[in-house]
Length: 332
Image 1 (cartoon, rainbow, N blue to C red):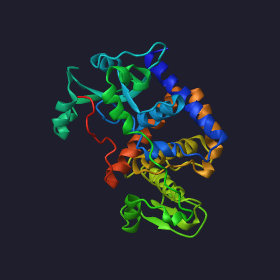
Image 2 (image 1 turned 45 degrees about the horizontal axis):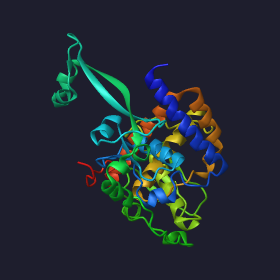
Image 3 (image 1 turned 120 degrees about the vertical axis):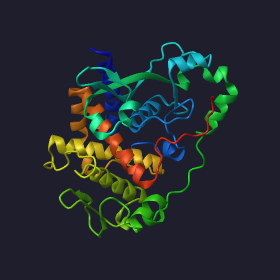
């Protein structure tokens, strides 16, 4: 088995365990309320956030092993910090995309920066090769970083200490999210969003529109926003946008896959907006199907996460959310 396949299998095993846990309680949020409230965004030691798909998997790692912070580092960075990885600790893969460019006639390679500087006609002389790569990271709790740098550690830890939990309003309309409220009030999404008193939420590809129940019909305000983000996730796949295959027969494998893309997109956007998003009621039945697909082909999850990353970036860009925000550097 190739290294990339082993890494994909490790990722799948983690997400299988995560989703199996949700089978027992599919009403719990994809990410814990504490993670959302503490802005538990997985990042490196320089506070650079990981990409969207890696956020989801690294949060699952943090949840599984109860890590105190979502801060990760490579073995090389640990050595630079004079820290060491503790005995028997295993790394976790972080995936990223890279592109190579070769001249069609000479096969000579060029750098991506140079390729992007070329005009449209000049680019036709080159072929683009896409590669999926990964590198391994460790959580700070897997190292002796806290012993080597106690002051830095305390500063990092303080940023993720949960505050007193606010009471959840009994009235769902009392729960607010300024970003999404402003988008809805001013019709600022890429397709129309209709709010009607009904019991269905759906995106209609042929009409390129979203229809949602009224906020007051939801048990909790978070449910309204999570559903809104879910349907927005579907709408990013329209042929005018990211061009996913979204017009699929209900209950089919492709339909279930698109639902998983929308679920992950909603969960990630919710995290960035401070909303604990739960699994959509009608998708609880697909949990077994998703687990089966993960078992059949580890790369299935990687492809879903790739689409999820693109959809999340699209939504964040349109809403003015910086999903890769650079925060204050704790370790120079």
